[in-house]
Image (cartoon, rainbow, N blue to C red; front, side, top):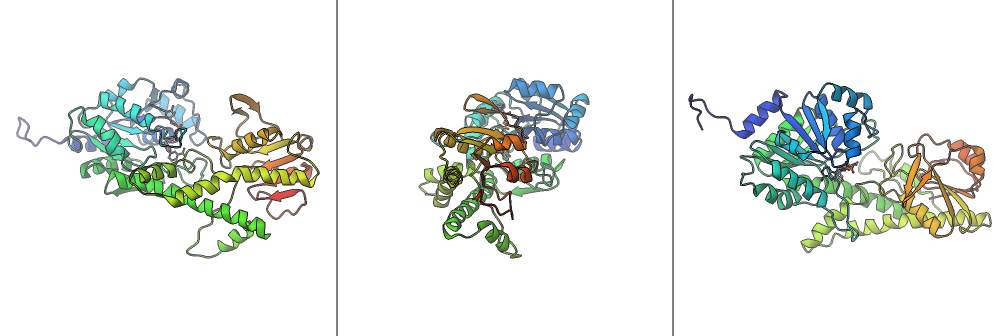
Length: 444
Ligand SMILES: NC(=O)c1ccc[n+]([C@@H]2O[C@H](COP(=O)([O-])OP(=O)(O)OC[C@H]3O[C@@H](n4cnc5c(N)ncnc54)[C@H](O)[C@@H]3O)[C@@H](O)[C@H]2O)c1
């Protein structure tokens, strides 16, 4: 197409690419949680003006004041970026009218029936459709079943009458962030990107290349969606395998931790996974069920996923059995005993308690008649089934008040030597007391 001066008119893709290269594009991120906020901050650090949109007014207000609520995102960076006008936040979706790109980073939980709950994706996409304009790029980052981008989002955007790959661009790019990981972050974790059309992939790659160290284009949105589910299913199945091995080793009187450590000396073909009290977080316990749900809809039974889910889901109950064993050694029953759970976040050294197996263990012990307390340096107050609980400060006297201590999340900051000295009985689900032989320790 030619302009009146005879020059070739640039396509919307070329216009966007050039705005990205010149850092003059205005970027939007929907959903400012563990995934969205680090991404928004990275892109603002690259020099883009970034507007985050969230329905949570509290988060938006905090960001407007330059305060971070995500452990891996320093408040100093947020403050500086907000002050420099590069980062801002709002609950008002009409800002989408002005932004050139939109990354959707909203939650994807399971429903009560353990089916995918894509309502957050749908409601965010409806807002995007309302303000969609020529040259805009939309990227879904929420983990979801293969087909979501093209079966759920694309029809909503097409209703505007605009053409994908020409007037607007749509892609999927799985987020792989690992909260609390000191080595890998949003910037240096390779980013897989798959667009609805080659032009969509190209523009989305162009966006991420501005800041991220490595971008990996793939042939379709479905491949990109499946990549994330393979990664998380791989973890779930392998954790299920070692959890089963741990139960087996207990029966056989073999130390499963020593077995894994020794197997890990093999320099190829083996990767260590460790048993534990159960799966937690917003990814591993949930994502594989997005895949098995979709497989079922295609008439396929995902047996590994279901089996791993079954084994991993049983682990909290197994920990309760170990507590009963530890108490039994001292002639006590679970009912009426005081039990202290160490660590309520779902993994070490972070503050995220979503789907944490510790909560499940606490609930099961409470149901069995135990009096429960917890201690966690990352979670001073815990919302436990609608009741606020305050964490116990660990001292020798405090530890002596409990009949049993359960090490559920092995935070580095716990004083393990003091726990070993002062606790009357210990259930160690993480091998935190590695090498310490004591009759009062029951190990997973
Ligand atoms: N947390 C992780 O470690 C991680 C890692 C990789 C992928 N993921 C995936 O990324 C997605 C987001 O996860 P998260 O951990 O960042 O979740 P989160 O709960 O921390 O953040 C999601 C944010 O979206 C907001 N939100 C919900 N509905 C909205 C809407 N309609 N419009 C605007 N904002 C809305 C929420 O208020 C919240 O602030 C999920 O699909 C998750 O599976 C998470």
